[in-house]
Length: 471
Image (cartoon, rainbow, N blue to C red; front, side, top):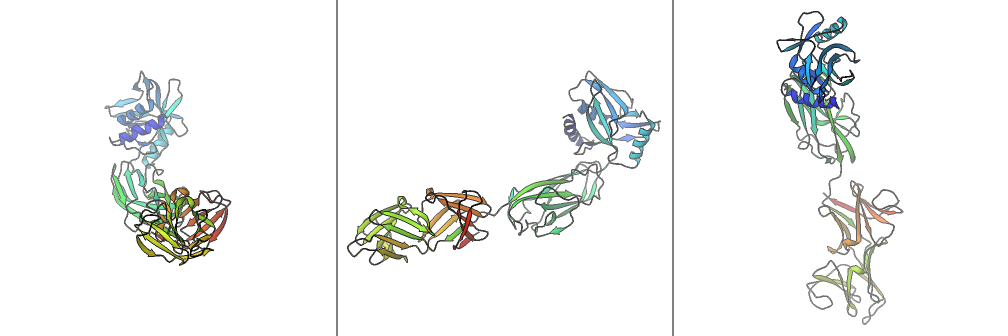
C-alpha cells in the first residue's frame, strides 16, 4: 500500500523536476566527492522519497539497500515525525552517504559510470521495530522514460475507418529527450501480444501490425506529451470475423531507446467487432396465405406452416353475399373487399367498414374459395398473398410482416432477439416450440425446433426464403 502511495506522490514530483517512471524507478542525482566509499545524493530528492515512504508514521529509519534487501548504508532516523539524517549534509544540497562495505560502494559506483538504468538500489523505510515497511527503486542515470495511453472505440465493424477513432497519447517522463520514437498498432484476438511484432497486414492476421498503424515521433523532450493520430488508411480489416479483439499500441518495439523502464511501453484495449445495424432486412414469403372461415369468422395468415397473424388482429364483415370485407387492426383508413365469385381482392381506401364506397384498387392476389355460390358464402376462402414479406428496420428495431405494403401482423404478438452479430431470432406467441432465425451474413432463414429462444442450438432446417439487406 505504501509503495503505491510513494508512486503517486513521486509522479506528482516529476513535474517539479525529479523525473519519475511509472513503475516506481526514481531518478536521484549523485556526485562522487572523492571521499573513501562515499557518494553525494541530492538531498531534496531524498527528502521527497523519505516523506512519502514514512506516510503517517512518526518513528522509524531509512536505509539504502541492495536488491536482496541487505542494508548498504543507513541514511537517517524518523523521530516524532521528523527526519534526522545520520550522514553528513553538505551545503544543504547533498547528503554524503558512506557505504558500510567497500564492495557495495564499488558496485554502485561501477553501475553509475556504466549508465546502468536500473542498478537495483532502493531507499527503504523500516518501522520502530526495524521491520522493512516500504521501498522505492532509484536510479542514478538520466534517461528517457516513455509511456502511453491508447484511445480506441468500444465497437467497430469489418472495414470500418479508424483514423478518427484511434489515437495514442505518448509521454516522456524521463530526464532526457528521446529521438525517433516509433508507435505501432497491433491487432490480436487475445492479450498475449508478442514482444517484437514484425508483420504488417491490411487483412486480419493474428498479432500483426495494422496497415496504416505505424508512426514515428522525431523528438520528445523531457516532460513532453504528444498525441499521435492516423490517416484514413487505418481501417479495421475487412475480413476480420465478428467478435472480441485487442488493439495494442506499442512504443519503441525494437528497443532502440534506452529508458528507465520498458514495461510502460504498451497499452492494450478491447474492441468488439459487430455488424452495423442494417437499414432494412427483407425476407420474402412466397407461400404466405390468408385463410378465412365465414361460419365462425376465423382468420389466420400463415407461411411455411407457421402462423403469422390470427383472428384477434382482424375485423370481419360478411358485407353482401358473395362479398365480405376484412380489415387488420393496424389499418387506419382502408380495408380489403373480397368477392368470392369474381375471385378478386380490392383495396378500398377512405371507406367506412361494412359499408359501400371509397377509392377502390384491385390487388393481384389469387382467391381460392371452397364451396359457396352467388348467393352463399363459401366454407372457407384462401387468399394467396404473393408479395408478403418480413421487414426489419434497424432504426426502429422492430419486425413487421407486410403485404401490399400494409402491415398484416401485430407487433405485440412477436418476440425478437439478436443472438449474434447479423443473426436475428423472431417468434410468434402462437408457435409454441419453433422459431425463425434470420442470418443476414449467410442470407438465409432457418426454422429452429427443440431450441431455446434467444440462444444458439436446436434442430435447424433452412427454409427456401430469400433475404435482402439494405445497409
